[in-house]
Length: 213
Ligand code: GRF
Image (cartoon, rainbow, N blue to C red):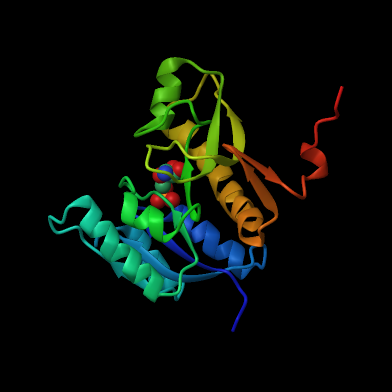
């Protein structure tokens, strides 16, 4: 059987992170195969982008189902599609037990702030309103809490005096598109250890290594 790690992407809207992952795979910067792109919203632009990229794209509307019922159906679909990892990319729903149990520590999310600062909606606006000088983005494993699982990777983006929400979001998004495929490269290769909440790469990059004092 093909040993390439199989991932599914869940999204609700624009789909630019899904596209960044797909392009990283095309460019062979990420060794993975996208087996399904699924949206809870049929009108999500990300589904159209996925189709244009030749990826299997599916809408799975909630249709009044309770969260756990929906997530159980989603988990079966994902298993059926052969997914080993699930990447949330602008997926605007909390993930509940049936999905978490189907993919233990194998659901990943990207959030546009330096968590644990500014979880939830409009993280960039929250950062501007709070007045922080640095924000950024975080790739983390998903648990039942909102944006609360163990942190895989972060990128820092300075907040400039001239920034408004659109401009700060744009610069953070640039980093998201770089960071998500990079973090997946580490996770999918299995080159990390999880100790409590800490995820430690087994192959730290030389430029990120901090010299012990
Ligand atoms: C990104 O900012 C991501 O961090 C957040 O939702 C946004 C999704 O954008 N979770 P896109 O759909 O990937 O373009």
